[in-house]
Image (tube, one colour):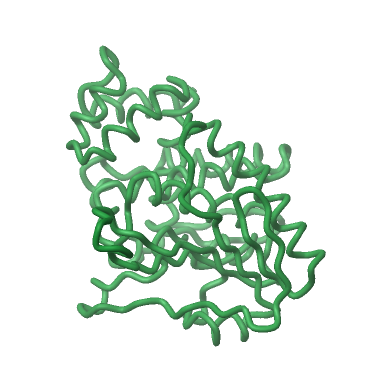
Length: 301
C-alpha cells in the first residue's frame, strides 16, 4: 500500500507482495519471522503472535470476523485455506524491521516465502504466507487489508511476486476495499466521498491503469486535499489505489458476489482479463473498456 495517506491514518507500506525481486533484478527473499518472546493464540483460521496472550487472542478474534466478511464478499465460502495464517505483531517498529528486514517506511505487510515442492509427489508449489506488523499501527483496517491479500494470493495460487502482476489492480483493489469496510461508518462515508471526487477528476485511462505498478512507476504529486484538519498531498499512486478500490467495489456491489467469484475463478485459470470479464459477466461487459465506461458513469452519480 502507498505510504502518503495511510501513514497518517493506519500504516505505511503494506502490499500483497512486500518483497518484489524484479525491482532489484536479483532474487530477494523475506527473512523468516521468529517472533522470539511473543505469546501465541490459535483460532480457527489464524495463529497470532503478539507481546501478550491477551493481544494475540484479540488479534485472532478480530481476524476471524474479518475473514468471514472477506469470504462472504468474494463468495469463496467453499474455499478452505491449506493452513492457519500466521500473524506476527511485534512490540515496536525497531523489532519489526530487525526481524523482517522491512524498510523504514513500512508499517506492515504480507510476506510470501516460496517453499517449493514439499514432497516429490506434490505437483503444486507451497508457500508460507504471513502477516507482519507492530503494535503502534495495528488496526482492524490494517488486518482487513492484509488478510485480503492472504486469501486472494492463496486462492489464486500466487506464490511468487511475478504471478500476480497482471491482476495487481484487483488484488490491491479488493484489499483496499476491505480495508475501508473496516473503518467506522461515518468516517468511511466521508472519506469515500472525498476520494471518489478526486478519482473522478484524475482517473487513469484503463490501459495505463492496468499496467501501472506503484512499486516501480515514478511518483508524481497531483494536488492536495483536507482530511481531519490536515492538508495532505496526493499523487498518481494514491489515485491508482483509490481507482482500484472503486473498481473492485463496483464489481462486488453492482453485479453481486457470485459474478465476482466467477471472475476470480476465470483469472485463476489464467484466462486473459477481457475473456475472464466476459465469462464472469455474460451480456454485461466484453472488455475492461466497457467496464470503465459504466463505472465512470456510476461514479458521477
